[in-house]
Image (cartoon, rainbow, N blue to C red):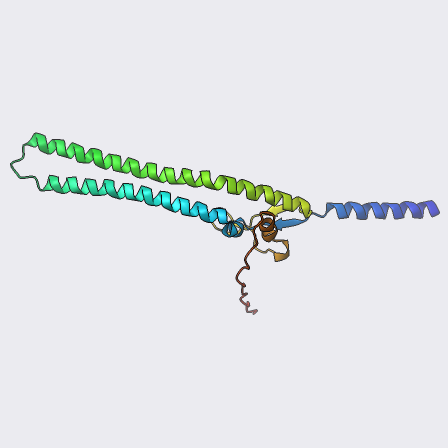
Length: 188
């Protein structure tokens, strides 16, 4: 009887230990919030704004050149030979095509520059998030936002938000978030 009781007690303890080990700690990190606190991101945004302004200025200059040449074409006297008119039309068509091509290249350049500048930030946040998760015993860390801005989680408990821990590990003192208010739901 005593052996049976010891066996049952050992079984219960083993099951309790197995259940304890099966519990997984899940947290989330708000990368948008983390990035908003990082000085490096403000520098990147400034650099991208400058790059965008340079591209916009070049586009504007090309557009103004086309407009000037188009007005000159329109103001050509009626006696202008057809060969000259056809040459100016080809020139305008070529300028328009080059403008559209430059417009696409400028957009591509801006996207490439953005990806190039943000890649080290994403890698750093990922690595530090992994460190914080391991140090605090989390099994999973979920991002509460989808790429297009929609929420992935319908409910989150703030006590599992490790965003401030990631910021501290990055050497950044987080600024307090604005207080959120809840709207009471009427029950029927």
